[in-house]
Image 1: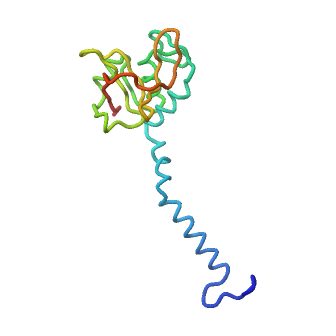
Image 2: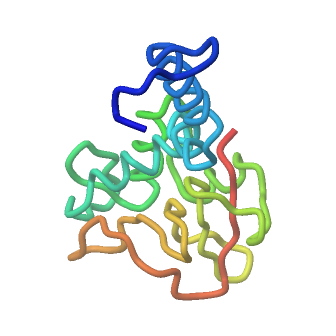
Image 3: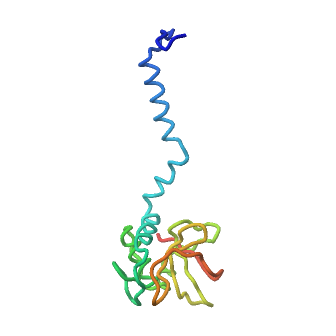
Length: 157
């Protein structure tokens, strides 16, 4: 059969091209890898992107951005940019968030570090056991592995 052979039956070359194009376009809607695109629109994922965009910003006690942050200032600023309002301190953010288990945590959830009953630090969960946070004086906003099991997770509503 030559490259110019006539296709028998009711489908013309244009008809096949249209059918293949339609099937291809329909298939892209159903591909599971398209799901992260929908995720990108959530306030949690927006806040995570904002926090990541502040990589290298210096820690400053009491600062809530846009160029310097303390831990809760970074989380408050990031969520504000994502359209959500958070209180100013880590403890107040913990009290306002919906508690979730470590198994249920998702990217963008808040990670609260505690000692006894007191919350002393907060960051934004980045996946794979890591957080974006503003650690302490002399350091900058960074992504780091969670270094302790004394954490609780909260979801911003």
